[in-house]
Amino acid sequence: MIRKKIFGYSGIFSLFMSLLMPAGSSLAADVSVRVTLPDFEVNLNGHKVENKFCEYPLLVYRDITYFPMTWYDTRLLGLEANWSPDEGLNIKQNQVTSSYVPYNSDHRNAATYSAEVPTSTVTINGKEIDNTKEKYPLLSFRDITYFPMTWRFAHDDFGWDYNWDNNSGLSITSNNPQIQTVDLPAYAGKNDVTLFKGYYYFVETTGTTNHVYRAPVQQSSLKEEIYSYNFGTTDRMPRVISFQIRDNTLWFTYHLGEGVTGSDKFVKISDDGKAELMLSGYLDFRDTPDGTLIVLHGAAAYERGNLYLLPPGQDETNRKRVGDSGVLYGSHVTYNGDVEDVANAFSTSVIGDDVYVLASHVQSDVNKIYKINLKTNKNTMIVDTSVNWFRIINNKLYYVKDKDKALYSSKLDGTGEVKLSDHAVSWFDSINGNVFYTTKKEDNLYELYKADSNGEDPLVWTTPIVGVQVLNERLVCKLSENDDYGLVLLGGSGSLVLEVADPISRILTSDNGILIQSSRDSSFKFIR
Image 1 (cartoon, rainbow, N blue to C red):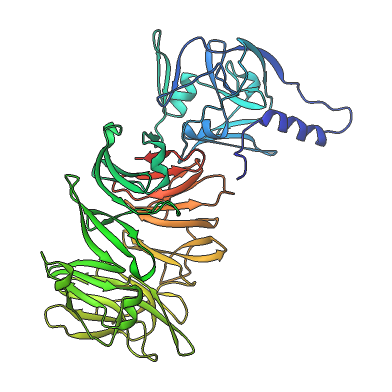
Image 2 (cartoon, helix red, strand yellow):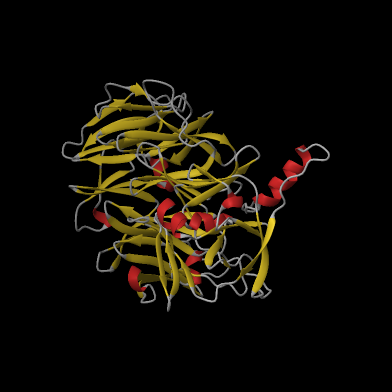
């Protein structure tokens, strides 16, 4: 991963200008001043700064505290700093945030040092200042620009909460969204984690047993076991659990066994923490007013007639077949010659008593969208074209066609079809009536677009992304490890909400805020 930028503008500026100046010309030299380390406590957004062994400690000059404009320190306080030969150093508030990074070193700092006063142009929130005439100028120390935490800048220009107390020292609180570290045990990072209705859910593996815990957000150390199972072998990696939120209910799945003798397990968690095994097999399912709709996958899918309804309160032996016994449901079918290849499409939706499902008959009639009424078992073709997958959003059908991989929409009866995308679609979803989709740019990188049926689809984010999902009315975009930022949050119109400086390994399921795992130290973070 690239090293995050830090700002030593005075040195860069001086070198650049020295190359441009003709022989015999000179620039005003940087002035050296004496600085000390604070002898009082300083808190930045609730983080106590430890200066003794910090590579970029806080400094004091003329009784004013200075903070280092490192990559993470600036973004912790909601600032961005950029330098150019024409405009010098430009500091402004922006929609950015970061975890607190202490920049620990292995050497102890002295009590006093020398720092320099840069002579380059400085612009703060659009207002240019002459750094050489400032009573509290920006300083340069260890090739990092240092910013004065005066009332003028901290309170008036940036709107920070600025407090001084003789006992507790200096406290600065910025108004950008903050990243909170979640106090979960290290082993939680080896499996899935989720946040749901005020509890964290996570897994511990001991020997050949997976233990599922939940712990309240306010006291995450008070864990309680809600489920456990033995996966029976130490020869392979421990069986991975995956948490899912379905219709405002938390579920998790895991797998036991090998090949056709194995099966997926589906466990439902009630609000009081009780976990109950509900379904077992290679399948997908949907809740309906008449019971649980089950789509069999795996080897059973090739047998056709793989759609069933399980009445409420019945076990799986009492399920009843739905639809046509000669049709393959809920899978995407392709043919290599006469050889059929089936991929689980998970394209099944329920609206009232009607099931919308991908259905395939014979080789010449595959991947069509059908509606099946659960009361009458009547089958009706809705979309008479081969579809890769589909979803129902706000009572409209959205589907990607096999022929061009473009995104289309129609009414629930299949009429009024509209082409929505200008590009081949890898993923799509909707927020506030706006449809967004990705198209593959290169290996593991995608471009994010907003669908516009009346014109050219606008590119929502300027650089390719690794992936995107909709969480709590936000587009959550994971960026490449070569990007400056790790995560971007976009609003329902596609506008920027927040850039997160932390490197991100995973975006996790949650019903509140954004839960992520850091790739720096595998810790869990929460953005409200």
